[in-house]
Amino acid sequence: MIVSKFIIVAVIGYLLGAIPFALIISKRMAGVDISKRGSGNIGGTNVLRVLGFRAGAIVMALDLAKAIAPVMLAKFIIGDSVLPIGGFVLNWQWGQVIAALMVMVGHNWSVYIKFRGGKGVAAYYGAWFAIWPVAALFGGLILIVTVLLSRYMSLGSILSSLGILCLFMVLTVAFGFPPVYLIYSLIAAALIVYQHRSNINRLQAGTEAKLGEKGSKVDL
Image 1 (tube, one colour):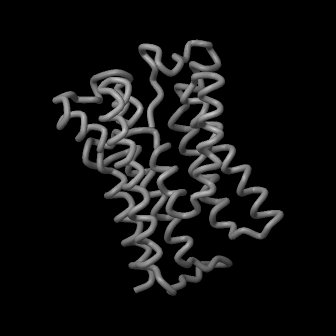
Image 2 (image 1 turned 180 degrees about the vertical axis):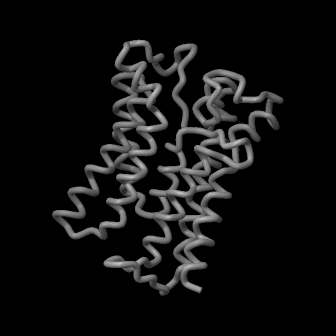
């Protein structure tokens, strides 16, 4: 029974995370297949670039919401249930992290569109807004400052995820925060870096397009 609750949380997280709002909104608002326009990535930034602020803002808001909802729901589904596994005791906090990671997996590899998707950054921030908004604001500050200084959204996305990871290293070691959040920030940062591997190669080669330049391949 307890195991089934965690499975339900994971399935809900994946199925909601997999909803390709960038594709849906771009087709509804402009009759455009966003996967064939701009960078070709199915994410909010590409919609913003191709269709403008209104469409981009709607997609980003929906991508945040699809992460917030299952993470918040996980706390109520798991409730006071605990699942001992080895030296760990899985509780509602683990349920939230499982939901959050599955939202990212769904966003990046959506079953609805042949396992294509975005890069998981918006989903990552949405989950933190549900778990601990301070982390989302901290990472958002790093992202904004990086983008303002460099105009590389990819660099901002990567550094913000690594910044949140460093934050939870300190909070876990020095202030006794539950290690579950450190584990989440580590796995999520690894996913974000992996999804940006082509951007990293272009950054190293000096060919990465800056925000606002035609051909930029950086999407949330």
